[in-house]
Image (cartoon, rainbow, N blue to C red; front, top):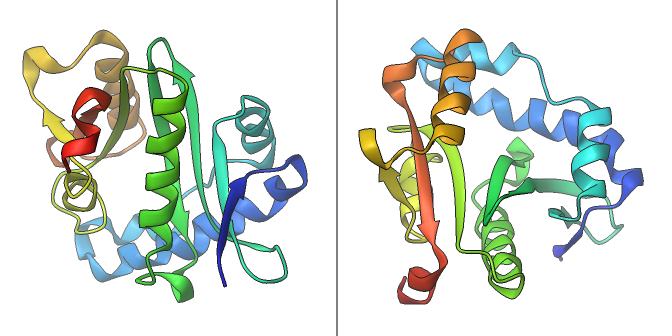
Length: 176
């Protein structure tokens, strides 16, 4: 039984290990396999995001996190920084439940949109988010904040031609 609940400060220590486990899925994509051994978001950064009140965990029957969605409020948007589900728990609808919770919360907060950056062609990235109504932003549609994030990612080795910014306009969220 999985429960989606707000992340707690004491969850922060488990989240980097979940990210590491989830990242192993990139080993199936030769040109991105290096991501499986990349750096994870620190427990300290997770604590800061949790304190912002826009982070959720998927907890098992013992209330241990098996997945999480870390986000922050950026102006009128909820920005998803990270979504990870432990590799052995993927494919069970946990990621979907986390995204649905974030969409619901953003709507309750009266936010205009949800944004993120991700890989264009990786099945569990942009194609996954499209199922919720997220759209890929192109050129002029990418605001300064998202352009800066994509640029920072490129500086850290992410192949810019494979990355994209996405947005879900909450006024359209109910049409998915």
